[in-house]
Image (cartoon, rainbow, N blue to C red):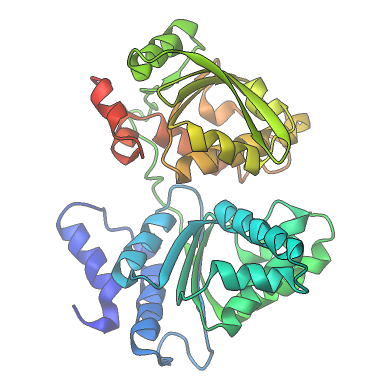
Length: 371
């Protein structure tokens, strides 16, 4: 496999093996990743695709389920060594804030620089999945973070559902975010994965009806999720526990064998954040969420929390079951962020399908389920 088209060659091999379907909407992105691979391996800047510009990475965007993360992972596996990092955007930002807090406790004069240096120490490639900007605090520091990465000569691959120019659209003080957009457009090869098949949605028949769905209970059914809970707990004792982080307390009413049941109200109507969801994931490998409602434009914050929660569960490869009286695509159809919510719909289909069992962090659950 020659360096000049290493990503393309691997992709072609996967197509020939029947592992993936050739998708012409992905080809420009694959070419850009070929060129970035050459830069990393040869440590010089080729002038074929990148012209005379000094690109430091590839920004991949497109609609949900179009294979953006998969393409990044193909690239990452080719390059992967001890100097590479692949991380979800929410994890990356969470760690930035953790290290900034550590820095302040030591009276460091530049907490952000300390955090960037500590988090990216020794790496030459950073792959960040599901990049998005929802929080004003993130928006104000992202330009400084990625400019520092460029200065450290760290190559970057980002995947996102949103083009750079539409990031943080209508966000608070968005004009202060413009330097980040300018930086991306200057230093990244921006590639859109064009329209095509959503690879996450399973079709159950010729007229295109979605299969409902190994772990999506419609209509909402207490007996179904209780039966699942009892199978997954594998005769372990059911407990109620309290978790605490930074003086924030949360009660988990029902947990056994790292499986727990929550109502949607408990997880998404309370004032919870990514940090709270990470605490849950630390002690749960499967989560059952009951009574997912129809959300209106007034429920923007609930929709955002649900989207954030699903992103974290997806990235951490957590088992998921949902119960609702409506289909996933009808959960949130109008309101701020409803376009971005399409990724959450797509992930619901993927994660509540039995094929998700093959990706779970906890492999023991697959043995317990005879599907």
